[in-house]
Each structure stands twice: as C-alpha cells, then as structure tokens.
Image 1 (tube, rainbow, N blue to C red):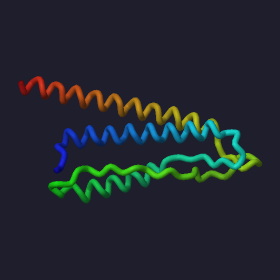
Image 2 (cartoon, rainbow, N blue to C red):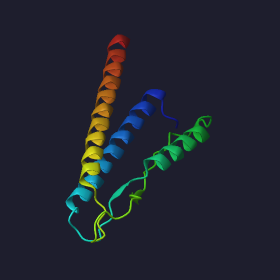
Image 3 (cartoon, rainbow, N blue to C red):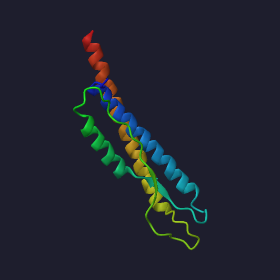
Image 4 (cartoon, rainbow, N blue to C red):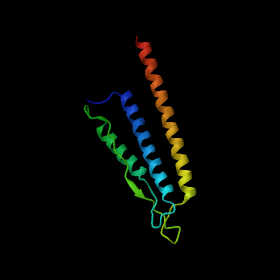
Length: 128
C-alpha cells in the first residue's frame, strides 16, 4: 500500500535523521582512530545515496502500491592521500568541521520533523 504523502514526508525525515546519525558515528570513529597507524578515514557516500534514492522515487512515483524506497548509504574511504608517514590520513580539522556540519544538519532535520508533527496535530484538531 502506498503511504499517504504526509507519511512519506515523515518517513523521509526519519531516514534523513538516521543517515546523519550514522555519519556522526563514522566521523567519531575517525576521530577516535586519529593516532592509529595505517587507519584510513571513512565517510558515507551521500551523493550516490541521493542519486539512488531520487532514481527509486521517480520509478515508484507512478506505481500505486509502492512505498517510497529506503536505502542506506555505503561507507567509503575518504579519497585523500595519507597525511602522515604512518599512513594515517585523519585530518582532525576536517573531521571536526564535518562533525559540526552533521550536527547542524541533524538539528535541522529535527526541527523539520517537529514542524511536520505540529502541522499533523493541527490537522487532527481541526478535523474534530
């Protein structure tokens, strides 16, 4: 059964929050391994995730019984050369900036979800 548009939006916001949470975990792991010789920093392949999700959403847009797809981004190694002689390529400034950006995006997602729930709550009250 296809979800109503209200549930699709809520589902997309939940997926967005899940992805941001997963990215924060990966960045935290990078920071924790900043002194581990040979460690390669990782990140989520968010661009490929968005391309795949958009492609799937377009494919299912006209299908009556298809819910919106929920994919999961792949974890990839960051494509930068090792910064140190021990082969570790964790750049703490980059990781901290990325963590701050991820936190801001998570907060934005929470605010959008709160606004969405307020709209639904208002619609329910008006329908009584």
